[in-house]
Amino acid sequence: MDYEQLISDIGIQPLQLYLGLILGLTFGVGASLSHFCLRRLVVDVSEFKMGPSSHTWLLGLGVSLLATQLLLQGDASDISEAQIIAAGSSLSGPIIGGLMFGFGMVLSRGCSSRQFVLIASGNLRSLVTFLTFALTAQLAYGGQLTSLRNQAQDLWRLDWPTSQLYEVLPLTQSHYAIVGLLIVGLCALPLIKQRAWAHLSGAVFVGLAIALGWHATSFVAYHSFGAMVPQSITLSAPAAQNLITIFSLDAPFVRLGAGLLVGCFVGSALISLVRRNFKLQGFDTQHPMRRYIVAGTFMGLGSVVASGCSVGAGLSGISVLSANALVTLICIVMGGLLALRYKG
Image (cartoon, rainbow, N blue to C red):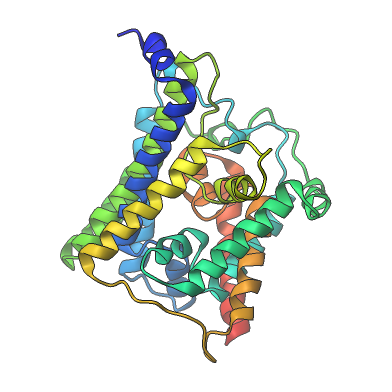
């Protein structure tokens, strides 16, 4: 098949929107089915246990790692231009940003992706948190917080040709695929024993959405001569970019990001309708607005400083073996543990 001609006929911009919708819909359905959230794993870690929520998140990670490494084979799957594995990466950014994101994630009782999914079920607290997250991320990308972001990232930079793990550690890509398979087996078995089919299927959907994102965008990039940058699911950049698009006629419309957000919302709303769990939830004395605004600010700034959120780094980044993403994930967990101690 002449893929170059097919892409030309569809158009690179409409194709990005269609891809975003498919990826977002798959992710939204999976995340809503399984209550997918890194915060739940952090809580289990703080209590020295492994519950269904922890197995669910780790299963999603394992599926994304395994499927991505299997799909990224051949010339048409080159992701060397992906930002998450760019050369000369910051190490201070993932550390500082990860700690900030993890702290905010626990304060708001959910990571940014979980907050977005909950909006579809009528959670107004999540709406405020996510809007604050998006606004702060935009300020860090290209607004008044840009200098603060640059200062944090410039504290410690690494002069590596690439930040992928197999360039740093004596392991091949095949070894990491095996690691992914082991994670899948170890986490799927407890869920199967507990008959937690929604958690199991949802986590698989999430992991496959991440892998499909890398495979599809790298494939299009190869056959369109670099018209698209290889990437997968993340929420901080799409939220920030499309927020500024709403308020500025001159801002570019980021079609892949817009598709991701719309698809994720639609997928989450579908599950909410099927389960009939739509319920408006607002603020009260136990859930004050200021707490969620602070949490959204921490997550928004942290995700940009770290160059990834719990999904963008924790799943998408690690699935392509980004060393920086692994540091970000570890620091998100540490930041969450600090927040649990602070709350206690």
